[in-house]
Length: 372
Image (cartoon, rainbow, N blue to C red):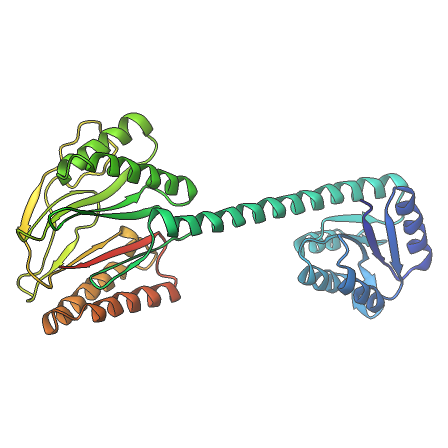
């Protein structure tokens, strides 16, 4: 492919000479003595390479350089001057010129300048194509994640969603409906963000489903997942909570590994509490971790709230305080109307939307709401 090079220089002899050299080197050249005509042509063609004179009648070439870069940042501009002024060189480079050519020039100096500039332009374009391909793949992976790994849930008594910081989230959740009004909830946050963490999340979900076929004990499930991650993968850690719900006997048993303590909202402020215990250890770090099993009673209209540490990871020092205020709002609303699950959803959504608009969240964000 032949590059079309634009030359803007008010000296006719210089322009014609440069046009001849570039033609000899295999380039198509368009020469303009008038900078206005040259800029008009550039607006249409967005030439990849421009030779631009520093001193133009009625127009400073450095100002024209900025206009060209504003229109197409990828265009490489080689500045030209007959004045051996080092300040022009410095200013041109500061304004993102690609190279500087001193007049009078030779075929050799022109060839060196344009070869270097063309190579850099091609590198930029290749990088752009590569980046576009990555961006396209990430968006496709994000769609798959929403449909396969952790699809959003918005049912009568379950509400869950996640918001990745970069297309693909490392957060995930799964709810298994068992027999005899029993359910198993698994909520996790893989270390890091992006595609690699997303695939590790998929692997952990596969391990979880395999283990839970024959074992519904949350502590043992976490212990087995920990062993698998530590011995077979050993590249990513996991923060997670596993919860077994027995509706018939009104019991909830749980085990936690590194995740922020979930909250169980009861009908009064005094009864609402955090699900915590002393063995809240990150999963996948050590091979033989022991996870404790805790059990509590549940009642109709109790609400379980699980969330990732994305609610805290922020450059905003008061984000944790704001999240505590969010929990207070949920408690108040739940106390006033224990059956109004839709209002709780709205409170969570308003908090997330406002935080995203303010750019407060700097990590993958996810939450899980469950009303008994």
